[in-house]
Image (tube, rainbow, N blue to C red; front, side):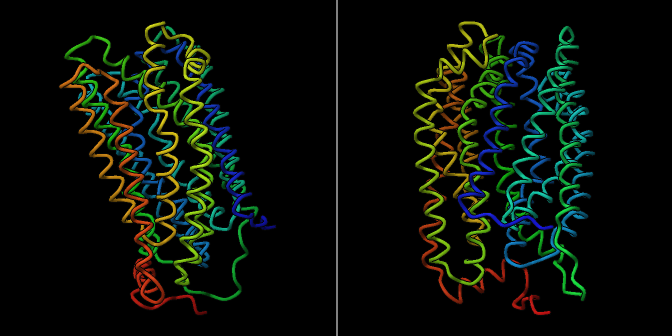
Length: 454
């Protein structure tokens, strides 16, 4: 039996709650993880993740929004071809991460990274399949599967990761690798749950043959989203290399400093951002049908509503981050030394504004995609990624800010991204009526003829 479609607010609340619980579990996970791994172990953990996120982005990140847009626009059966397409891409991503493990360990000057990559690489395939299922249900206006599987991922990862990190706590490289293996197991089990849910609730097959969605149509949606999403992990990978190598010129604790910034401060800041993630996901099936019909004013009205709600929720979160940064640092990362916690508090307070800017970036990017302008969001993300790496390098190399320079550069990049996205949405007023519909059709790769008649 098919799940009932949810309203915009209900869908947003469901997926936001799932995302918040997931992020909260992830933040709480850092308490025992930091105790077992220490600053250096957390640094290695975070040095592996950017490569994983890049491959994950290529094989999965554009899928939920892209498939959701196809499904919500009336393109049934899109998920069937997406399973084959992105299953294959997921396998390729897994192999690439395995092959890249040794070169990355050499570039990062950290031998433990190789084993960590090998333990983590199978999850690239599992997340690819999982993302197709999430996109299918999001396109049908059902946010429960996304929320439930996100929470399941974290529960399994936390339980197994803590157990393995404790068992191998006396062997730091193996302890880090085992926690990453827990990620692989969590993604595999979540994928199985999602596939069971899909088989139980998918739409019945039509009695007659209809023109299916082509691979090129799927890629025309997901490739721009992939290039948009990949900008952040690429910038984080380059930033980790640049920041750690520059910090090594002035301190012996470069890996630990980067671990505190990326593994601790960013974790705390991203927690309130997860609250607004549901608004981004829930806006797609609300805006896409209006954009597909050429009702750009109605679609923009929905987009501005989502942005306004995002702003109203994120501002109190930013204030709370600034005020309660010492409490969060003490509760979540109690194993850090006094000086490390003081640095963590400083970093969190500097980046508290990102609770607003990053939330607006993720919602506005989803709105641009729903309006049929994913390439504009891609441009935005790459511009902000370049800003982030460049400012990080300049501030660390030419000032005494040390790792604080990375926090300031993060603020600059998200502010730039938010302003550009907002400007793009405002300018969308110029595209109305038939012209917008033709642009939308051309974006779908239909070459002027829709295959919706059956």
